[in-house]
Structures are given as structure tokens and as C-alpha cells.
Amino acid sequence: RLEIRRAADGVFERVFIAPVPFLCALALREVARSAEGARGDPLRQALFLDLGAGTTDLCILRGYYPGPEDQVRLAAAGDEIDRLLVEGTQARYPDVKLSPVAATDLKEAHAFVGEPSAPVRVDVMVGGRPRPVDLTGALRNACQAVVDATVEAAALLVASADPDLVARLLENIVCTGGGSRIRNLAPYVEAAFVARGFEGVRVRVVEESKKAVARGARMLAARVGEGEWQVT
Image (cartoon, rainbow, N blue to C red; front, side):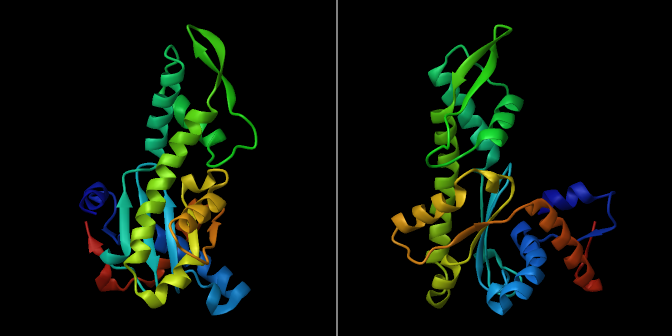
């Protein structure tokens, strides 16, 4: 939070720092309420898994602004998938050195967990010439390492919640962020929770979550009281 305030210094007169999952939930609230009533309110009782590039943020929402005990931040995120993909590719093809940009592009185009719909076979440049390589195993291992770490942390967060809240959290797990575009993510996360002994698990992925976060930020800014802003 301190780093964010420092970055805003001289750019904005004042800031209000809020968790990304909370902003996304704000934007989803009106649609959910109109479609499902209070039960569909993602701010009421939900577990958000926001899989970003630099961090993965987990957040329990229960109808009010989340406190520190409701949040967990992990370093395992999209950048880690890139790193593991580079390592896994080079382990199988020692002469293939994916650049960070190439790894990111391949991840964004083909990322998946579980069973792929088709093998991930692509051409990469080696010695100035294209070479066909099979990245299926390396990409699956990279994605699943990060998603498994996310589920493990999320399971611990759920286990620490009020027992009366657990069932509702498990049936309302929401995945957001760029990592939510990983193919097969929802069923994979559901199965991972079930494998850990949880029941009644339901996971959904938010489409265009970046736009939802932006809308939520605008909505929150309109509601923040004059004395709640932080001067930079």
C-alpha cells in the first residue's frame, strides 16, 4: 500500500486504496441482484480469487469492506507461470530459450489446467529458424503449479472463516484477473477443493474482469466520504 501511495505522489491529489476483488464485486453486484436477488450479491458472502500478473489476491467478502484477516496475497501468479514455462521448455528442449515476451504470449494464447482440448504444439525460433516444439506438459505443469498454490491458500482461508459462513463461501467462489482466462479453470478448482474434503463447491469465472474492476473503482470513488480519502 505504501508503494502505491508513493507512485501516486505528484500524480493524484488524493487516493483511496481498495482490494481488487472488492472493486470487481461492486461492479457485479447490480447485475447479480437483478438476476438472482440478494442471494446473488457477490458482496454478501463470496470468496474471490484474483489471479493477476505479479500477485494472486484472495479475498473473503461478507457484505462489508474486507479486513486484513479476510485477505491473502500470493507471489504465485502469471509471472510465475511464465518463469516455470521457460524452465520446463528448456528442460525438454535444451537449445530452446523462450524470451519473457514469448513465454507470456504463449501462456495467454494456450494456458490450461487439467486435460487440454488439443496438444500445444507451436513453432519457436532456434538459431534464426522456426522449430516445432510440444509445450503441452511444460505449460500444464506451470499453470497447475500456480493454481494449486492458489487453491491451497484459499482452502486455508476458508478453513479459518466462521463455520456458519463456510458453506456459502464454497458455493460462491469467483475467479477474476488475467489468470481467470486459463482454460478449464473453474472445474479444475472445484475438483481441487473437493479433493481436499470440501463439499458443495461451485466456481465461476468473471468475463472481462478488468472492465468490472474499473467500473467498481468508479462506483467506490463516488461513495467514499470526504474524510476517507488519503492525501498523497
